[in-house]
Length: 80
Image 1 (cartoon, helix red, strand yellow):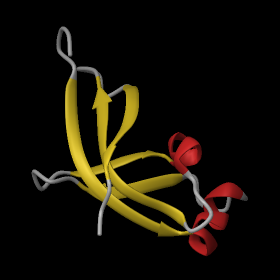
Image 2 (cartoon, rainbow, N blue to C red):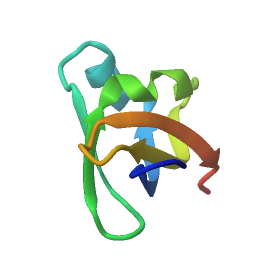
Image 3 (cartoon, rainbow, N blue to C red):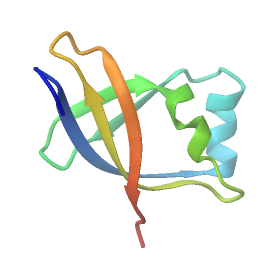
């Protein structure tokens, strides 16, 4: 991480059925509670590379700059 970049960790579980709302554009933003208690909102399209047959689930790190502009999203692990 460089400069003023920040990151938040969170776990997420979205069923394949629920992700259809995002895929169809009926819901455009995802809101998650980060491990540190912050509530974070980001575009649902960021999750598209992580969609599996059963939906999306895992531990993620969301990186953003000092202006809260998204830098990237990375899957760092699985959730039970």
